[in-house]
Length: 65
Image (cartoon, rainbow, N blue to C red; front, side):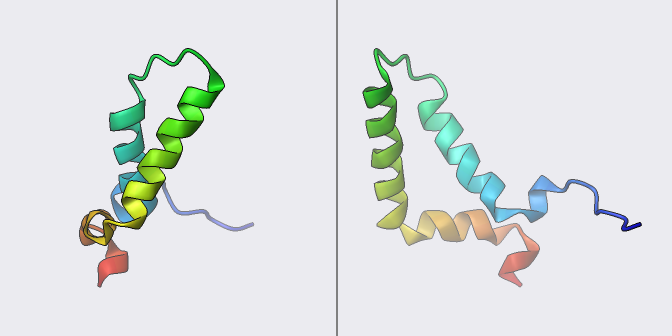
């Protein structure tokens, strides 16, 4: 038997990225699936060209050590 670690979102940099998505897209009232797809692609493109945002997600995790 293996003991799995407890869930620790503050140590997982992916949680910071998902938080950014939820903040911008979470309140989107979309007319169709295409509108949601465009919003997600737009946010991914922003993250690709703004590495400082990703660095901010890594700043509070043990990955940044």
